[in-house]
Amino acid sequence: MDVAFKQRVDQLVTDISNITSLTTKVEVLNYVMQQADFLLWQLEDEQRIDEDSRDY
Image 1: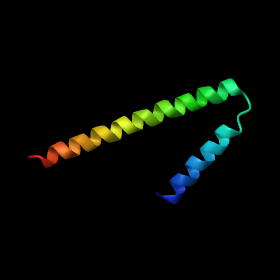
Image 2 (image 1 turned 90 degrees about the vertical axis):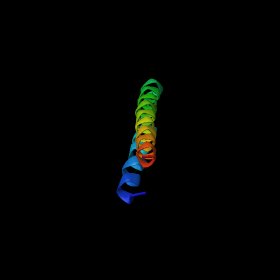
Image 3 (image 1 turned 180 degrees about the vertical axis):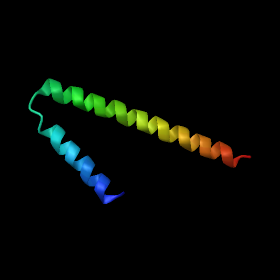
């Protein structure tokens, strides 16, 4: 993994950890999870497209 990306993700985790309002922290984490799920879906879709293009 690129060190710069790791540092940015680590900083985001630290920032979220420092949120004092439990309600806000839950909202932020839910949003992060939603975005991560979307990125995972995109990646899986790209992998399927790549695999399908190899079949021809």
